[in-house]
Image (tube, rainbow, N blue to C red; front, side):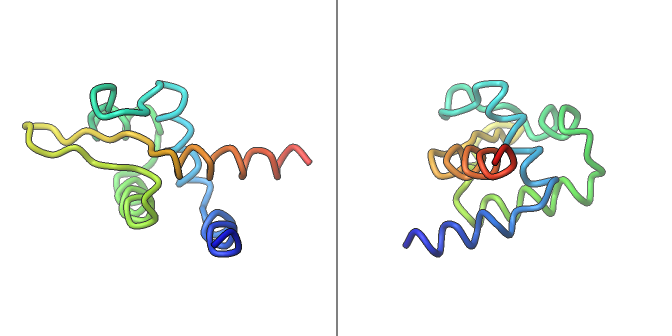
Length: 94
């Protein structure tokens, strides 16, 4: 299981990490703290196409969850996403 997780984390792009970083920096870690996709896109400063690609990849990997049911969909980082971000940042420091 750890090898699979590490493999997925290694495949994350800079754009993916930027999205995770924005969510973490804004403490969007639970459903009620989730931020809108529009706000997340603006804060990440990614093109719309790159943002959508990252959101899709991160949701499939279970690193983010999307809250639907309101006019604007909201996004928050999961525990797996936090671990992935921490792992990536730890590897960069080493």
